Length: 365
Image (cartoon, rainbow, N blue to C red; front, top):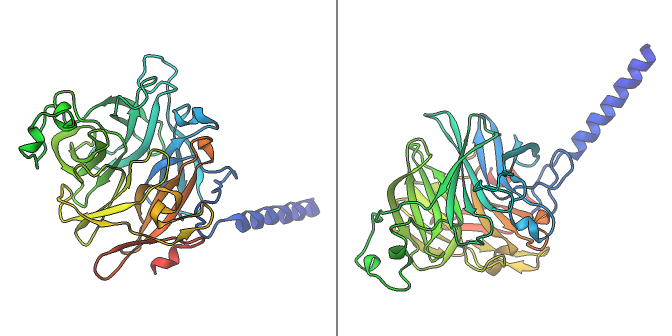
């Protein structure tokens, strides 16, 4: 019996040693990124929430083939304590089998972002929703809620925001009817909301930032105190600059808004803008990217083959942020890759995102 126990102990030690050896200790952009089951992480167009000492990564669950560009499963969740190694936490929001549901299988669910509301103690998920069979014409934003961070999330509704409202920075030109004045066209039914993110400020107020007006202009909207609706207070920013894929960080009292051009699945040049107020006005600064990605054979002018999705604060490190980018593979979406890179700042506040084939969090020390 003693020999058997000793043998069992040796086996367990070997298994634990093997598991420790398999632990990731660095980021390797564009490479396959296995979860705790050895399966490539399936959380595209995602965002990360830090809650009670744990990071939670939410993203679009893709399947193989072109059909994977529509929602066939839902929103996947992963958890981590070190940002390198992620545990599969399951599907947080599941598509419906009810043909009358707005999130029926075959609809389009993109860029899910989850935030925690300390007042209601609820976890709130916002995402871009396109109704099944309507391509990208619905241009809605949608919200779901859960009592627990990993879900399941209960779908509430979708809509076009700020119906009947004028932005706080409205101009006479904005109200002038014309064939290309998409803002004026959509006042009554609500403004379009495609690529989006959610940002919670230091004071607990939450903002929804989305590509609107046929992707010509971004809208920054204040959410209600429970984060479940819009207050009607919003601004139009980067007007007529055709930007999408917004991501936001705050540093030294300034708001950095990172975005992408509008070229569909094809990569283009990232651009960032800076403001003293989240509602703007924003001053454009050009691309923050530097370097070359040998895996995609693309440089800074094409954002290394990626598109922005989130700017992730690293807990416990001052002014430490990770730029999260997706390298889309629309012909086989499940194989889409992730390009995570450190965000650096020069003395003058300039944002720099340098390509690195392998790096770890010590760059922030």
